[in-house]
Image (cartoon, rainbow, N blue to C red; front, side, top):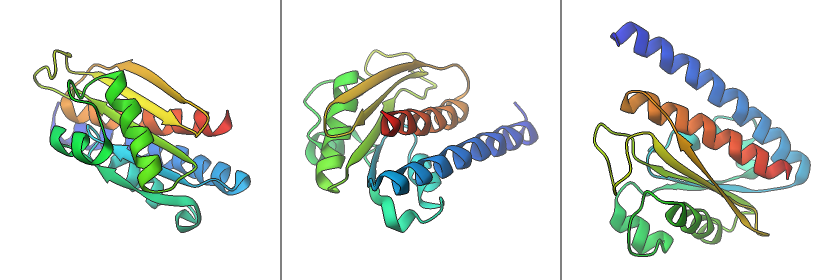
Length: 167
């Protein structure tokens, strides 16, 4: 993919993230919910979209980018073992929800490539939403270059957060 095409792809993905983040803002304000994020694979892309959304200071509690396995284990109480897993995503969501005292939290972890991680092929992504009454996890299987996988993972994470907020 050439630089121009990659730049276009990035802008399209960013516009999609921004639109979903605006919907999250509306839902959070309408329902009086606070939101927190734990990210690994996406390295802050989800938090960036939420922080730029309307009235974010009223509902966005913050985020933790736990890129290294050690941080996931030590800070978010991810159990020993693979960090590209449903269990890790669940622990990350519940850990950041607790740490930042949020009503709803979302977490994303995965293998972006170009090599496999924890035995998971590039494009294997786990997203968890913890709303205090339970944790839902979804596995995504995405194709593309690492930058494309990260961008698509961020948008999917925002969409799953919005779905989780709506019940």
